[in-house]
Image (cartoon, rainbow, N blue to C red; front, side, top):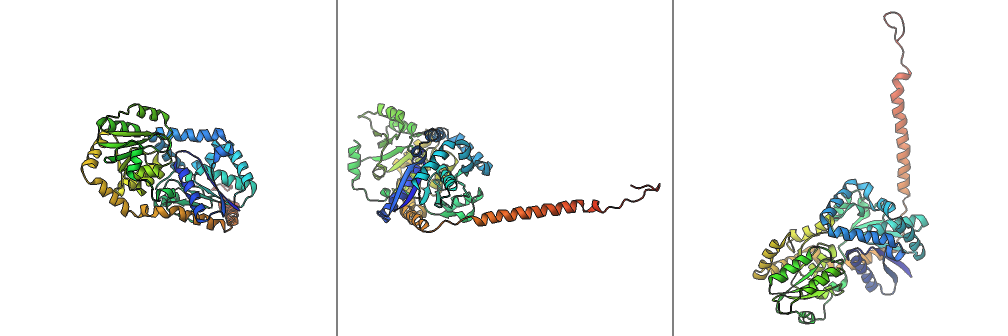
Length: 431
């Protein structure tokens, strides 16, 4: 049985969600035909120090979005110096060694990576052990990204949109190594939920007769969402709040401590959940960050998101998508939230935005995306990887041509002096 390795780094939920969506689609379309393994690569390989460093960096980025945006701009500016292959070699040697050993023992037939560092390690291992598997990299930022997604050594880099493709080309990714395929979400977000809205809200102690806002901040639960939940609760809007704190235990304790059963606003405070598809089914709108999986999970469930922040420049593209297509909003402060809440509660704006979601072509392409990717991976598995002899030959031609040009320039430079005849001066001497 052929092996399909899907490595990712579990920073937030986006990279993991894409990996699981493709695995589930392969298992559904080709049951029992392939071994498909999704791994948190650095952790699974035993590179614990590097795994912790990468996840700590991501948590810091979430907590400091403005700084992260400036770092993204620097990454894009330096281009060749900030691609993942070089960054991995400089910062994560332990991951390279142990990741390569993991691949040597696993012996994949193809690698479908959802994180740029995993792509680099898979490529290093392939070169080190002379494997012939293909490395496909899926760019987890669907609209814009950062320079570490650029990797000319990968067999294919898949972008979710034409905008992302143009970005990759602008940063130096060869055009012929880019393929555009829509953004994969877990198939459960497209399946019919067996529970009713009343059952879901009732199990949380909420009132089904009220509008419901789902508040979350991605897999880590880091960001400004908590302060907006407190604002809505203290204002006493006639709403239900489902507050998902994910792995943020401090936020969970803080929000839990303010719960008052007699309050006008009803609230259910949850930790990490695996039924977001059900919670979205029972929600009317949401407050969240602009992470790619988070945004598009909300949109396919027709739940317009109020975006509070983005983790760097790469997530700003998701925010722009929502604003440009009028399927979501962005707020900077509590005053803007208060104005928007008044519109949501007293106008038909929710219905208008849901209609925009239903008409949007990209959103309509999302249900089929994981299955298209699954078929693509299997098709690539069935064909041999093209060797790169042409590239080496091209390099040899450049070397020979460059040598010939240098020789010619040297000859031209000395041509006049080699045969120069010295003329006599006025005194009969020679110059």
